[in-house]
Amino acid sequence: MQTTSLLFLGSSWAYTIVSFFRRLGAPGLFFLGALDSSFLVLPFGNDFLLIALVSTNRGPIWIVYVLVSALGSLLGVFIVDLIMRKAGEKGLEKFVKPKRLKQLKKKMNKSVGWVIFTSTLMPPPFPFTPVIISASALQVSRTKLYGGVFAGRLVRFTIEALLAIYFGKQVLRFLNSPIVDYVVYGLILVAVIGSVLSLLKWLRSNKQKERRAANRKRQKNKGDRA
Image (cartoon, rainbow, N blue to C red):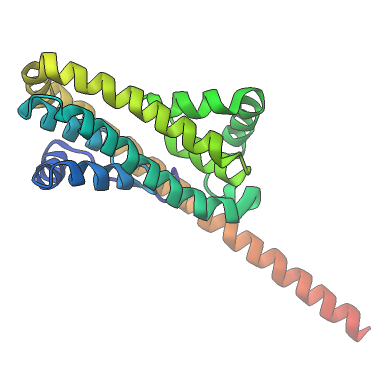
């Protein structure tokens, strides 16, 4: 979510997070998946953890890892859905820019299931959270929402698990390279700046609404006195 998301991504941070949840095994994948798909954004955190676990634990256990990762993601989406479905389209305007919202509505009107599936399948910086909160606020069928998320996550995590089985050591070596560090720091900078600007815009919008409400109240009081 652009306005209130907390971005924890960096070589040292990511390593600490992955190390903590890695000790939990499959439950760690579930909980991290839930966090990553809720309002707390942890780009690639669940992907790193899945690759690390599959690379070091060979055998059919990778199927369990994929399933619990997808189920954890589904739980995170469920939490977002509960909140945003009640907030509705008016509440959605606080989290998604009008231009972006217009684009999402247009795409969802054409093929909402496909939009949800692809947003779930694609890695950052593809806007997964804006799509999910928009779908919930616009009252998209829960069957389509949860079905699209679960299917997309299954495909994504299965591909990652298979890559980890065949190229696990090479992938982990690449993730620990300086190139990834620089990309990570760049993403942090962009995300923090964007989040701060969005938060300031949201606060300014709330103040303007409060002023308008106060003006209407004063005008009403004047009319009653007259």
